Image (cartoon, rainbow, N blue to C red; front, side):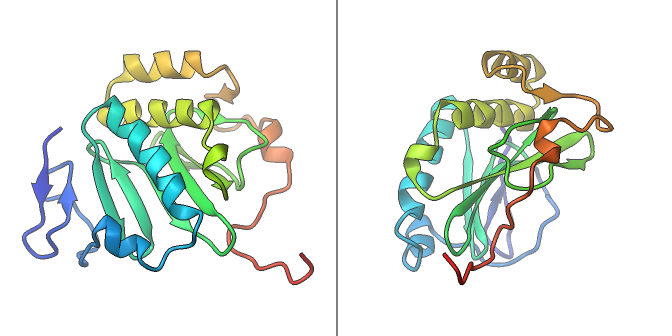
Length: 179
């Protein structure tokens, strides 16, 4: 993966002159200095897995932590009670684990799974992140192998709404006063 560092904000990207919101990034330690207790173990599990796959840029910013293999493949966004794990695939997953409507973006689908404990980063989620790593890196054969290894709970037809679309969506950041 080609790497480029923005001369203004000093953040690292997987493509030269990558368009971005030019703002100072954070170190991992700076990000976690004010984080919730459950966030670091989730980050460590996801980061360790992705770095075993190959070259990954870890980009902590105020809103969360992005992982890049060229383009962004995954993000961790802290919410009040959980971490939203977002990732891009070339297929639309249909899973009860998805916390919001799957978004179609330029031939890729953005998925979000909410987790509040590192044990929820299981083989299924790691399989999706493996696939996302290969999708971002442009390795379509490896992405297809990862998708096949992770089951067939997807559809490639953007007009086909699977069972995951019928389930009620869980809002990402609402405090429940009755909980």
